[in-house]
Length: 209
Image (cartoon, rainbow, N blue to C red; front, side, top):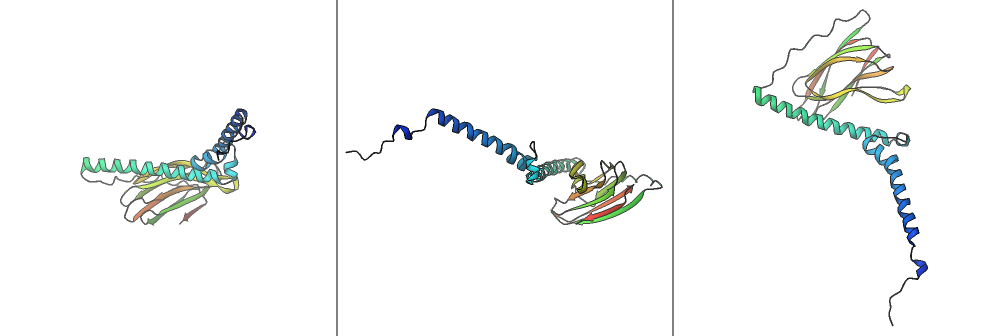
C-alpha cells in the first residue's frame, strides 16, 4: 500500500485560474510601482497619491541627496586637478555687489559649519522681486542648493540651482510670494565658514539653523 496522497483533479488549479492569478499579481505590482515605489524612491508621482501619503517628499529628498553626492564628487575631482596643475589654490578676487537701489536692502551674514553640518538662509520676497547675492567659503568647496518655498501656496520646493563651489554669485527672481535663499552643507573633514552678501527687494532675512 502506498502512503502517497494523490491530489484530486478538482484540487489542481486550472490553466485559466493560473493565468488570472498571474495577471492579477502583475496589475497589483504595477499599481504599487506607480503609487508607492516611484514616489518614494524617485520623487515621481503621476497619480498624486504619493504626495498625499508623504512618499513624494521622501523620494525628492533621496534624489536631491544623490545629486548632491554626485556634485560633491565632481567638485573634488576638479579641485584635485586644479591643485595638480597649479600646485596650490588661489582665491579669486571677489566682485563687488551691484550698488543698491533706493528701495533695496543690503545684508551680510557669516555662518560656521562643522564637518557634515548644513544650514540655510532665506529672504522673504514678493513674486517678481529680485535679490543679488554673493557667497564664499573660507577654504574648501561647499555643497549648495538655491531654492524657494511657500507654505501658503503649497510650494514645498522650487529649485533655482545647485552644485558644489567655493564661491558663487547671481540674481534670484522670485517665482512666487514666499521664502527664497540658500542651503549649504560642509562635506569636508574640517570646520568651514560661509559668508553671504545680499542686496535686493526683500522684506526679511532669516537664518535657519
